[in-house]
Length: 203
Image (tube, rainbow, N blue to C red):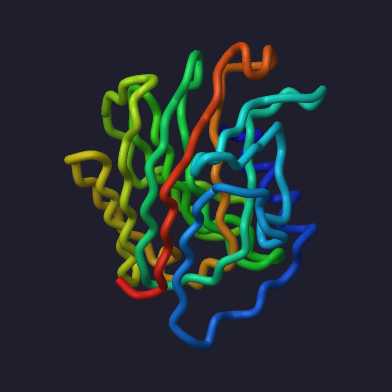
């Protein structure tokens, strides 16, 4: 997971600053065609087809798949379904500020444990929540995140998890989908899938 954060930091240096949103906005991804240019960086192999975004580790870098998109958000909701396949161990959703800020908050949805990580400043990580939580591999799971000032409420399937930190209230300029898909054997080892992604900048 440390490698995931480091590589997302590299992506932030590529995109630079993303202007803040001034009006209400909603993002709804259908994943039925090639990703738009707002998906600006990725590691691993990612395909969008038949309503599903699928990623798996590939290439010599030996890193779990991750792909990133621009979407300014402060308070609001993030909702999608995700699935772990094969030897995949976790799916994650990470939110970032500008290049000089770096990561802000990260939801890590493992097959055995759920974690919420805050990043009070660049290069610093604080675990706000680490709790056992079983996710069946091969099944679709629903996640809804609600940002309300310094509070993050994550509802996964029928379970609710809450964490608070001042940095969560900061404006989040980009987000990433990714995780650990099973290792360097690529798609043979496993994959991560996401669908029905919807983000709104109002709670």
